[in-house]
Amino acid sequence: MAAAAAASPACKCFLVTGSPGIGKSTLVMRAVEKLKASHPHLNIRGFYTREVREGSGRVGFEVVTLDGRRGPLASSKFSSSESLRWPNVGKYKVDVASFESLALPELQIKDGVDLYVIDEVGKMELFSSSFFPAVLRVLESNIPVLGSIPIPKCGRDIPGEQRPKVC
Image (cartoon, rainbow, N blue to C red):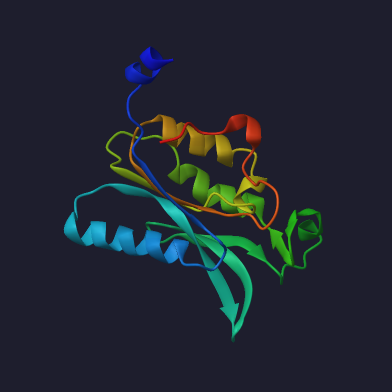
């Protein structure tokens, strides 16, 4: 076991965890802003999720890539016949196809990437069967990762048999 650990390269990841609404995404995005300001030539890829509000109430979430593309992740306002088949998290319907079309290309391993940002690895994102394997490939690439993982209210969100190695 010691030989295997010594032979494998070190994983370079910083993962923020905490309860919903505690500021994980804010911390991740402020860190990205500081990195971009202090190291403007860094090639940073990835995405973050953002609340969508109407007035003072939250009506959903959107996924935003670091180059500014955005699309719906989940909403309490989806009402198409197609959305009736989408998975639920609380009052929100999760648009897995929209999430995958934006997030998965950002997690492709590419030469010249200095940092991957993954905000977040949560219940909504994990409805995508392709997302967790993509996250594992990023972690195994040994390219630095900055990400967030919420503490689930109950149970375990991350699949138990496919845990990433501890960084």
